[in-house]
Length: 156
Image (cartoon, rainbow, N blue to C red):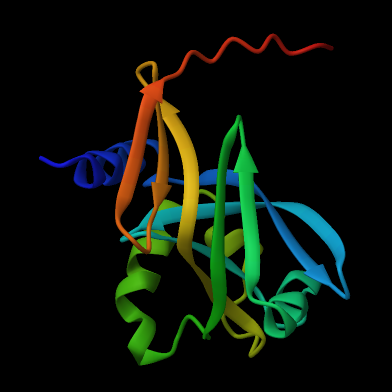
């Protein structure tokens, strides 16, 4: 298995579940950050939101976004996929309702015409696992692997 395929397998292990990231968007070069629940699949993260949210309004104007948590960091291009009940989104809806089952229907009202899914197609990123750091260029499908030891001590 090549390094890129190895990196994708590690990403599935780490992020193919309900995983919170800080999502950064911007408008007029003014950044905005908030935590969102995400799900990783096929070199993209997905999230559930509404078209009226600040994040979606900023994504529409500037699709370049960043995600970060625990020294994991990613840059990507975001797109609003549409409403969860769109027949073209059935497969991802089936997945997201299962992954986010603890809260999906309690916090989302699919009868709301503004509800939507956002897909963040990854451009580049850094993550680590088992004392290895992976710096990935998803467009060129290249990976730099290096020893990495997470040794930051949180201060309270």
